[in-house]
Amino acid sequence: MGGFALILLAVGLVLSLEGLVLALAPSRIDELLDLIRRMPVETRRNLGLGAMALGIALIWLASGLQG
Image 1 (cartoon, helix red, strand yellow):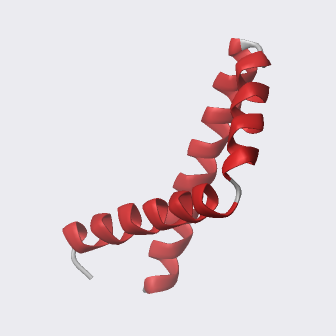
Image 2 (spheres, one colour; image 1 turned 90 degrees about the vertical axis):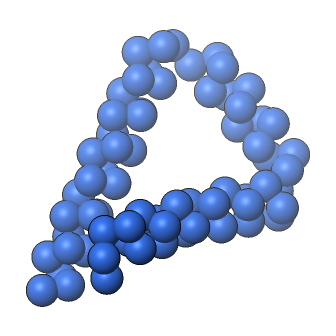
């Protein structure tokens, strides 16, 4: 799979999952956003960095499995 196709696949997966969450539990999104708003900035930053590191690790793992 080429680089551009892989990017399109990744964006499609993200949008599909985000859309699924918004469609199935819209009121929970409001609660989650309120919770995030109440978090200290440093906690939000650390969560974002952790999510980014996990995403990079999964990409690295998937590319290694591809051969």
